[in-house]
Image 1 (cartoon, rainbow, N blue to C red):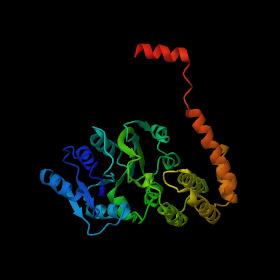
Image 2 (image 1 turned 120 degrees about the horizontal axis):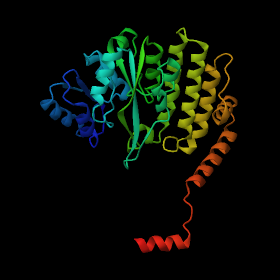
Image 3 (image 1 turned 180 degrees about the horizontal axis):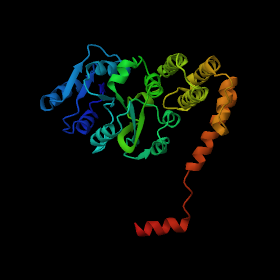
Image 4 (image 1 turned 45 degrees about the vertical axis):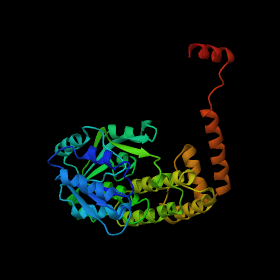
Length: 332
C-alpha cells in the first residue's frame, strides 16, 4: 500500500484491509508523505501486528513505492491497494476463498467507481468478469494494479515490477496477464475506487500525463520480446490508442494548450508501433483511431467539440411546464 498525502482517506482504507484475517499481512509504504500519514501508520501498527510500515527517506512515486513494498512482502499473493481507496466488507475473505479455489497466477476482481459526493457506478469493463477469464477478455478489463491479485513468486520469477513515473500501471497490468499461465476472475465488487479527489493524478492537469508515452514504449518493448499472437498484439495496440485518446480528451487531466502536442505524440507512437496488417476498430472509436493514424488534429478537435456539445444537450433537463411547477410548489 503506497501512502502519500492521503491523511483524509487513510483511516478508511486501513480499517477496510485490517479485517483480522491472520493469513493477511499489510505492508504500508510511507512514500515520504509530508502530512500526518507516517504517524497514523505507526499508530495503527502498534495495535495491528500484521501491519508493517516502511518509511522511505524520499518521495519516489506510486510505482517505485509499490516495488519497495513488494520487496518486503512475504505472502503467497500480492494485492496492490491504493491508500485513498477502500474495500467493501467481506472482500478480503472473498479474495482468499477465490485464491484457495483457483490457485491462479493472477486473479482479477470487480470494482465500483465512487465519486466524492457518494455516487457510484460499475466500470464499463465489469461485465467481462462474468464470462470465461480468457486472455482476450481479461486484457480488456480496466488496466490497473489494484484490480488484480498476483502470485508473488510469479512476479519475482518473471521480474515484473513497476516503472517510475505516472501511468505506472500500464507497464505492469498487461504484462502480468500476458505472462500468466493461469488467470481467474472473481465476479464480485471487492474494491471501491475513489474518483475525482483533489490531488489525484487522474484529476490533475499536468504535463506529466505525457509520461504515458514512456510507459507504453516500455510495455511494447517488453511485448516485442515475447511470442504473442498477432491478435493479441493488435488488441494491445488498440487498447493503447484508446487509452491515450481518453487522456487527450479529459479536461481534468489535459490543459487545452497541451492537447495538440499530446495528439501529435500519440500519432508518432501509432506510426512507430503499428502492427503489420493492423486494422482499426469499427464505429466512432475506429474513426478516432484513424484520425490519430493520419495526424488529423483539426478534425479530431472538431469532432471532440461537437461530441461535447451534443453531450451537454443530452444532459440538459427539460423545462418544467408552468402548471407542473405550480403543482410541485403547492406540494412542497
